Length: 113
Image 1: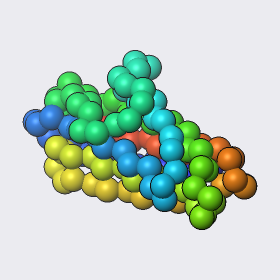
Image 2: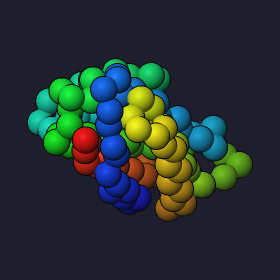
Image 3: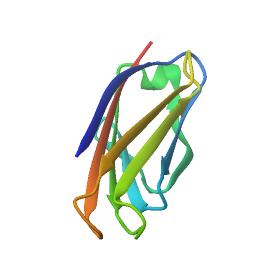
Image 4: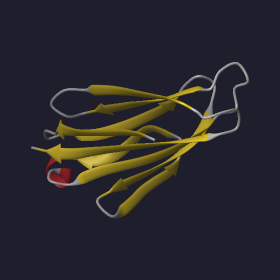
């Protein structure tokens, strides 16, 4: 399991999230803002909310990646947050235990003013 926990500074604008699963693997993500599910599935430019509305909340993401690429057991997940004080990118990588195995990625972003 790969785990990321970071703070993300918001401002007045809209914060958006993109998640990319790399290495020709497949996966699915569940995105929550505090206890509310915002989206399940592929995530591209997902609107999290405007800075003043989401400041003080926690953005939690669980991504399940299945190792389907016969050329490698390496998996990675790329997270991009945009619209805060600075756009941020994060890349996590984990090796699956074998062909067809699943790797769980968890990311938590504490949204701050």
